[in-house]
Length: 148
Image (cartoon, rainbow, N blue to C red; front, side, top):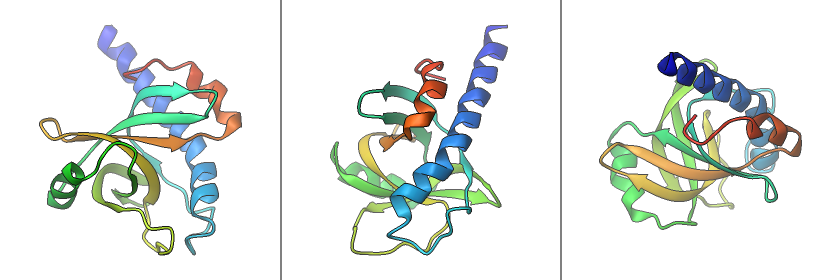
């Protein structure tokens, strides 16, 4: 029962991310990318924390592939990074590419957005990062607990 409840909460969190992501993508990449705002996708992550006042979401997500595993240890907490997710159609599963964010360069790549690096757990292959949350999505995310 406890496992079923955790799975339900994880799906709830994913649904909330799906609702928040279009706003996040359009606000963060509009000036940097030719990617249309309607080109949205769903990605998976675990809630670490939510700073309601600053409207910042801290998330832990899975990492796959050699490139991010090699690059992530080079970053320090607070570094601005550009995350690219592995995915198909409108669903992204894990982060498969990470580079230092450069505001002067436009990104044309799908499943990509900037974030603030927090930490990398190489043993479990998870990266923790921070991203802004639209004001109208805070109430939906507040109902979740860290780890969901």
